[in-house]
Image 1 (cartoon, helix red, strand yellow):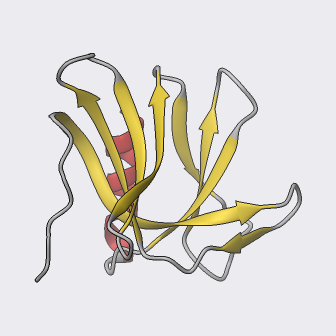
Image 2 (cartoon, rainbow, N blue to C red; image 1 turned 180 degrees about the vertical axis):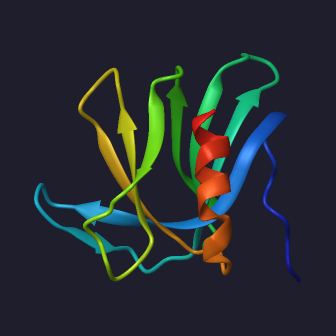
Length: 116
């Protein structure tokens, strides 16, 4: 039986299917798992969370609290896929993701919505 993931209590701002990528300091390689990026504000704490949900294991594998300091940008140098960098203005932390949404035409709108 298929079970929906436990949705966090709060307001979901944007969510889209995206896989994680591993970065070794000079190259990124895709993590083959299917995933989902979720940006939401928690009901109880009123904090904004960035989460990555593993759609295969049905569990949250990453949960970061962001304070208007994280934004996505497309990695233009990547010509073999739709790779995006989550950059933090408050630190030099960088996380890479690859889009898994079937319609590439919606990427710009999803990223714009996240960055707003």
